[in-house]
Image (spheres, rainbow, N blue to C red):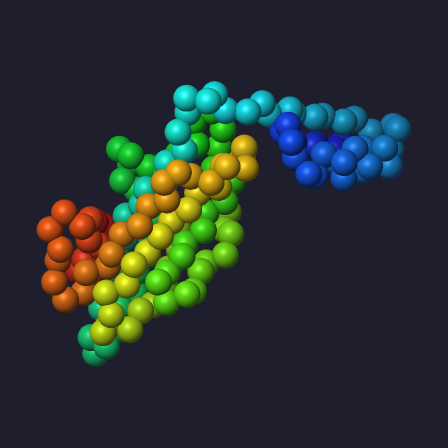
Length: 155
């Protein structure tokens, strides 16, 4: 016996494709469909993250791991829905692309103080507002700027 599970929400462009697949699906199989409504208007999507950055042995580059589920007291969230994808953007023009996992690791040149921006895409299709941008302060910390320091600890 075949089983097909389809999940879609109002306004999905994939609904037509899902309908076509359901029509082609074996009549003998079982079909489970989960319809997700939209999040309440008062719900606010949030993007938040911490980073853990470490120097290489020669102190010429540093590698940072970013985590959108940290801090645990205020992680990224999509109230009334769930996080579908994460995208990390960097001021050098590079991006992680859309990822299904909340973590990303990137290596930087030691001569820059780069900016890191997280954008959370919720299942409802709306991006987080606002996105979260934090500087990596390699040389000097900027008070109140929310710096990620290259010191081997989550901050």
